[in-house]
Image (cartoon, rainbow, N blue to C red; front, side, top):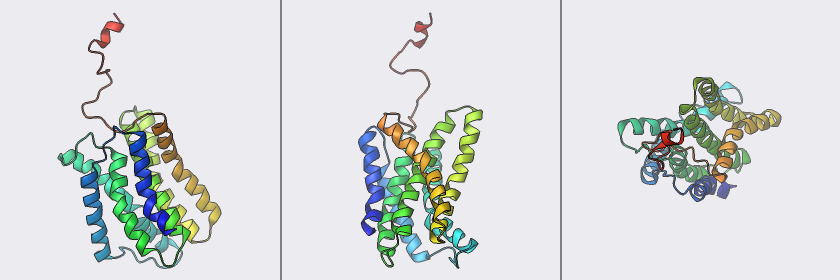
Length: 223
């Protein structure tokens, strides 16, 4: 289980690179910032006291385990792009997955005792589900009209909460609820993975437009 936690995110990232070789994950910066975040988390410790099995445990899971560790690179990617620190051609999902590699290594060591599938197996799966699912929905939403962008925005907002609740449900011995929310959390990422196999790249392209760049006279077809 420790090996799964250690290698799931790197293997997932490698799969994306193999299926979408044109994607650029911004590997250097993502790994550097991810390592800095792990060091900061090590010295800061848990931000929320886990408490028992109720709301305190859910909040601790969302902030320290499942939600915030993935939301931080998702948001910082957009901020870095706006500030010019990261090129717009850098792949959103790839950037977040690479950011999570140092965290997965740190958690694989930290959570090795006691060994629990809830932490060593479920959490890495939820990380990848949030990272890939939210990044994919964001790229689709920003290119879509409002009637599609609004539902996608709602799904994006709900995804990390559903993932954290799935973790909490399994931890609190509610497997039915946990499994249902796990499936709901993983579905957007599965859609993205299918798109990788079919060659539909959702990553943003710098200077892209709806006009085919290979056709210098797109209007000639309508003439």
